[in-house]
Image (cartoon, rainbow, N blue to C red; front, side):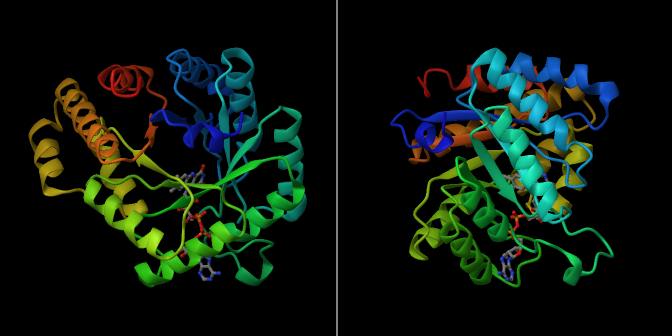
Length: 287
Ligand code: FAD
């Protein structure tokens, strides 16, 4: 099933992101965790992609398994900056052979020390054009309510986002954000720039305060004072932090639905208990 048809339906949607294993050794652990999330019937699940290519097979394997066994529509992430055209075509063939119909087309992070002239792909829009030419996939792209960290400014960022949509991107999924006003402001600016595709709001329930500081540094997402107070008070108490992180994410999600955002994507970090709590907390709202 195509993701665009799911997120364009009247019903508010709640979907889950998982990540594939890094090595064969932990494939089973990850498979089991992702299956425990699939049984909770999210509207769809996305599976991330390791930019270095080491886990490219695992993305397709995990996504294919979820779709075949649990009938959950899947969205396979695909990055291009570290890949050759041949590698991208091989990956598209692999995804097609597994019956996967949806791709989140990404540039990926620039490999350090790589000469830009030697790359086959520089931006996600080039990958989007290529997937469109290949045919058969519903294509999504990433967007950044607080602007991509490499962007000169928010106007340039939105300009390049429009190019990505014009290249064939049918929906956008946001980087995590912790203040919903940032998303509302971003949607206003995007619509004004003529970007009219659905925007799926990415929400991260923070249960591990140590990793969130690093993630925020890389992604450029700001932590509001209100959230920092929670981390300061409960960061050393894993059970309390988990409860507070889930409550904070739940409040964000309810506010998004109440303000007309119809699609929310939860960065589950492969944690079935966190996914389950969030789904339970909004069960009547997304019915
Ligand atoms: P692009 O859309 O190409 O944008 C990158 C930068 O280039 C931006 O600053 C943009 O404004 C600028 N730009 C675009 N076009 C032009 C142009 N023509 N000229 C000049 N500048 C331009 N990474 C992974 O490795 N694996 C994943 O599975 C993964 N999943 C993600 C899922 C989501 C929802 C998000 C938000 C990010 C994800 N990432 C993932 C991270 C992503 O790969 C990085 O943020 C990466 O740095 C940018 O990817 P992009 O597709 O947004 O790039």
